[in-house]
Length: 399
Image 1 (spheres, rainbow, N blue to C red):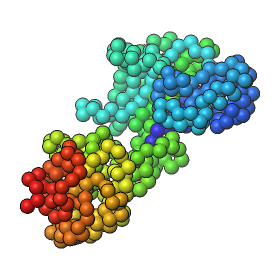
Image 2 (spheres, helix red, strand yellow):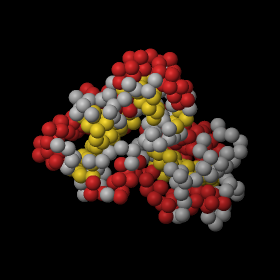
Image 3 (spheres, rainbow, N blue to C red):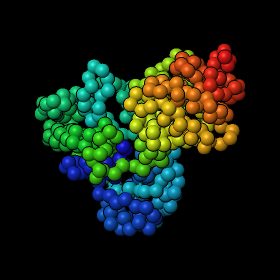
């Protein structure tokens, strides 16, 4: 779950990190009112499009304005537009901060096998070009891994402070900010807490001018008070259905039950030269609309040329699953892409017979996983066509 900038700053402020005064606005009139409260005193405001995406500045989503009329005009130009693929429905109007020095600071989950621990990174240079700076001068980023069993040690914070390039009095402030960021990261099950830039103002304060926070989706139930960006994507629609789904760039749609079986099927498809279009684990929902909902997600993807249903009936019976497949395929449009199915486990022979006797056009039933996967790859490469029903669609034709 990605938090929008103002949501991330609200969280960081709870941990004692200074952020600019700001107001979230949804109309030019609200922006004008925010100017009256903030801009008059600060001598200007910054309008920031609130979308779950980086590089907003380079895309024109951040505007600095120094009078009320310009603020309203900028709001009219930004609200209702699309930026980096996301609709702009909210603007964060913040006081203009006079910056003396910019830094980069982040806490993230290191997924490398060598150090699967929280990682804190700091750079004495921050701002929009941090990726280019890190690529051109990797030594400018200083890193500290935190053992989650012990937490952040004071000496680690001081190490980061020494490599910030700040004078000693400002290092004290930075060490406090590092500790606050780590607590925000740890206590909220975050995957990323990033401040870029973290600035020293002309008045000598340490302020988070921009912030990103990403919360682990698996831990969202523990943080119901946190509201993230509302992203309309196939993944979020699948999550609302209770399905575990990740869209990929292939052309073979996959429906399976069990994460291990799904990943093994994806690997096997790749070995055969196929390209999975998704990861979809129906889990226990396979008996409660999981097949039908999965098909609706896959058929909405124009890249999918065939669908592969690979099911193992352990706790559930294959004959029951077969009936669910029949019901779901019967509800599809008459001219749908081919669907290849294979069932294994409890009552698998009965399940395959149910599918074959249904005589559904476009449905191919294969007795082995190898044949089903080879058929799906062949159909994806060559398009639909050929016989359907039991034992149809084998690499060598019907037998």
